[in-house]
Structures are given as structure tokens and as C-alpha cells.
Image (cartoon, rainbow, N blue to C red; front, side, top):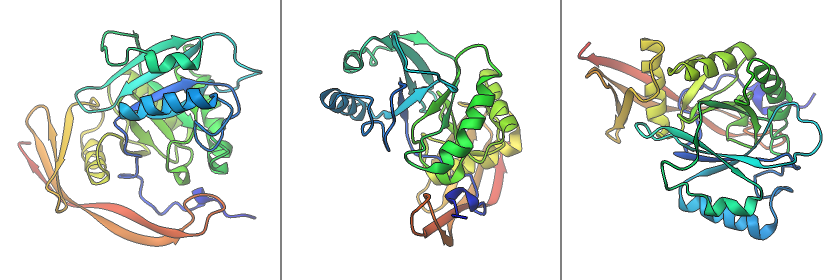
Length: 286
């Protein structure tokens, strides 16, 4: 039996979220390639324009589709733009008849588009890694069945398929790994209630890995609190501080520990891995 990248479960989840501050999610039912611009989605000139547009605004492009799709998609396509920066968290939805319209959308106008509630993205991109397809699709299908509204989407490669099934909750960008169906529902239900669930939490995409690990540690101490009530900062030498909006703060040391090499993607050769470890947590103002 071929060993899969998700078979390695000794790598701790906190600190492993892909680092992105914003997201551009484009509805598409065509054949996906290894990345959003290598499949059948865009004509070459349109793909180049969308890619330039997203790069100029610091947006990570993801293709999304509804779980359990049947046949080709017709009609207008939904486009979500998310800001995951703490204090600026927002999600808006636009509709386009043609992908060529995307670079002209008024993303820079905060009043443009339709405000949207939290959405869950489950990576199912089998062209990038088989674990995402095999493990992600059942989670996406079962989760989508829990909601009447289209708030659950399959998505293209998000990063970290060795943690499949992988879930991202937008707009805050909290990322989860190795989730069960129950944990995925808990994550989305928490976001819809205005708080953050911690089971399977890898970190918030808009902050660096060490700060992600520290924020997860504090969230596990506090229980469910809002996505933007915490702020993180680092001194660059391993000390990370997490501050609550009520004045409390927590300081700890976050260090990177080498792990035995493992395959990071199915079919690849083993490569080095690291774990983010927190220690020496000191609470101030509790």
C-alpha cells in the first residue's frame, strides 16, 4: 500500500496555517489543475489578468464549487473576497457573468458587494494531492448537508495537504486540519456565532507561524472568544505576546523543533519538518 502524506500525525497542528492576509474565491465547476491557473477555468489572457489583479491586492486565489455538484455550472458565478487581517475582518460577495469581469470589480470600495457571513472551504483538489480528494470530499459533503444556505464549498489547494482533511473558515482565515465531520461543523457553527473553535485549529492565516501557535495556546486557555479580540506580536527572538482587547496579555516562548523527515505531499520524497512548541507562558492582568 502506498504511504500517504496524511499518514504522518506526529506534527502538531498549531503554527501550520498557510500565511495569507486576503482571499479571492471564485466559483467554478470546470476541471481544476494543480493550481487555479493551470486547469480549464480561465482563458490564458483572462487568467493572467486575474492573477495580476489578485497579486496587486495581496489576495490568495482559490477556486470553489458546491459539494456534490452534478454537471456543468451555468449562470452567474459567485466571487468572494475576504480580508483576514485582525481588526479588518470582512467578507463580501460579488456576481459575474464572465471571469473577465473580475479585475474590474470594486474590491477597493468597502461598501461594494454584498456582505456575507462566514463560509467554510474544504480542500478537495485531487490534482494537487490525493489526500485532499479522498479525505476532503466526504467532509465537505456531510458539512454542506447541515445548512440550507450555500456556506460550505470545496476549494482548490490551500496548503498543508498533509493535514487533510483541511478546512478554512473565512473571513477570519482560521485554518483547521485532520478534522472530523463533527469538528468541521463545530468550527463553522462557532464562526457563525461570532467565536472561534479550537479543535483541530492550525492557526490564523494572517499572522506568522510562531504567533499562530501562541494564539492557539491562548484560545485553548480562554475557550470560545471572537476572532478579533486577540492581537499577537513577536520580539523576533522567540518571545510572543498575545493581548486581549480587555487588557489581559500572555507572553510565551515559541520555538521550532525539527521532526523526522516525512513526505509533505503524496508521491514526493521525504523532506524535513518542524513543530512549533510553546513554553513558559506568563499571564499578565488576569
